[in-house]
Length: 249
Ligand SMILES: Nc1ncnc2c1ncn2[C@@H]1O[C@H](COP(=O)(O)OP(=O)(O)O)[C@@H](O)[C@H]1O
Ligand SMILES: [Mg+2]
View 1 (cartoon, helix red, strand yellow):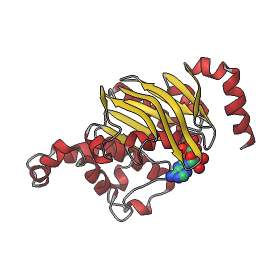
View 2 (cartoon, protein in one colour):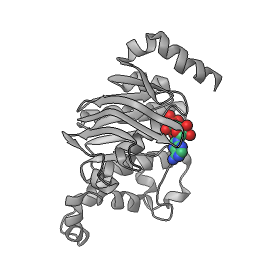
View 3 (cartoon, helix red, strand yellow):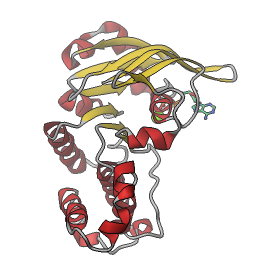
View 4 (cartoon, helix red, strand yellow):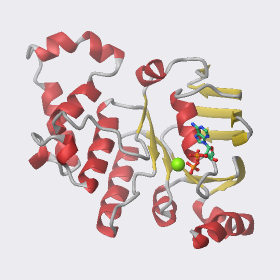
């Protein structure tokens, strides 16, 4: 579904991403792990089109999307969450989802009809999403007033409201407690059941090992390993690069 081919991104002299090949198969969860600064978020930013590639190709459903602007990629079904939460703090929880739901092109065309109440389904869909993320009781709260864990769930709900085919999750478990991570685990599995393809960047290795079908490992902008969770966990190169620095962190 998504194919990164020899993708590089240099910031001045920093080779944030350096010749990475990465394939995300349709319907699968690909975990992307690596020490801080290894280029994980940069890869997500490149897939979303936040900044241009230095070199390489990003092929999505058979087409090179590397030159398309971010909104065009959203329209094609690519959605993301941010490592640093980005919500509309002055909008309510419900309104945040409403905005996200209307971000895809086909939905934009139906916006007026839907807004005028021609169909209740859009509103019901938001209500269902709020239930799924245990946020129904917060629907009229301003997003900026939510607790941290709730904001993370809303960020996730917002990405899902765009009805993505491919969802990029950038450290969704950051700052979560064990119970919240457990619930996140369940929600990610449920999304795969619903046919959504997921690229999961995560520092909580246990979570990635639990849900990912395959895992790729970055170090200093390069892919140093890829395989099943068990194979990656047993790989001595990974243990040295990743677990070595994680222990120091
Ligand atoms: N917008 C940017 N401008 C300059 N350097 C950046 C930018 N974004 C990331 N970097 C650098 O690229 C490297 C990889 O960063 P990042 O992709 O955020 O790593 P990770 O998400 O794996 O922690 C780091 O050295 C970081 O400082
Ligand atoms: Mg990051």
